Length: 114
Length: 111
Image (cartoon, rainbow over all chains, first blue to last red; front, side, top):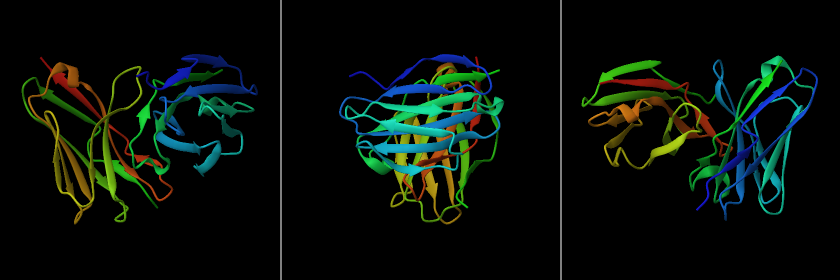
C-alpha cells in the first residue's frame, strides 16, 4: 500500500511569507501528526489531527497551524515566516490517535526561509 | 519536564561487529518506546518498539532492552552492515500521545 506522501519535497520562501505543506496519510489511517526537525532542536511535535479535530498541540507559536480534511489528508500552514522556521517538516500517520498503533513517517518537506 | 536523550552523538563500528546505541528517558510513567532509523533525505523509519511490561524484545538483527529502574533503553544491532549507517532515534510516547524524540545517534559502519 502507498506510504505517507508529503508535498512539496522542497520549498524556498522569503521571510514574512506564508507557506502551506500537505500530507496524505496511509489509506485507512485517521491520525496525522506533524513534527519539525532542525539540527539544533531535533524532532519536535507540532500537532496531531484525528478525524478532522486537533487532538494535541506542541509548544509552537500560533503562526503554526494545521487542519485535516474528511479524507484524512492534512495541511499545515506557517504564517509570517522567520529564518528560524527553516527545517524539515515531517508528517506521520497512525491508525488511531495517541500513537499506540505506531506511526509511519513521510519523507518530509524541506523548507528554507531566506 | 518530559525528555528523552541519547548518551553518544556518534558511533563508528566495523562491518560485522555488533552495535549498541543507548538512550535515557526521564518520564517514569512512559509505557511505550520506539526506535527509529533515519537515512539521509528520508523520514524516520520504524525499527522496533517495546512496551513497559517487557524488558527485552527481539527483531531481525535488532534487540531492544528496557531497564525501567534506571530509565534506560538500548538498541543492539547484530552483525552491523553498511546499510545500517544512519541516525538512530529513541522515542517515547508523551502524556499527550505524541512522540518525544531523543537527539539521535549517528551510526557509521566502516567496511
